[in-house]
Image (cartoon, rainbow, N blue to C red):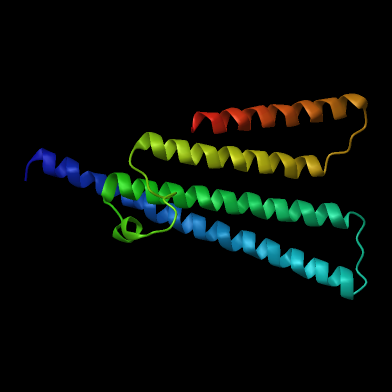
Length: 165
């Protein structure tokens, strides 16, 4: 066995990243779904069991946005898992034959980085809005900084979209 064969076989170590990224994505999907279930239980109590917490609406919206954040992170893990598999191990026959979306089709490391980066930016934006929901505005400058941050996010999203076309 020559060194080239050993080196080529070493790429299979990346299978660990594939397995654990996939498991991590599944775990995040389960946690996010459990969070949505808990919101459903809270809403049921609100309407049918006379349960009226002080910040009910903000809590429900915040929890749902938090679940969306977890779903997006789960998607990052899946995209990463599929991408590493396709780049280092081999092509996925079922994905190649599929007539559905080609979002998980990865042909280069740059393409993988681009897809993961875009979803991570969306995770950060969703996380930002989740945190903003619980902010108490005490001065006019707070509202000004809020407006500036929203504008910065919009400009960033615009240029992120322009870069992909």
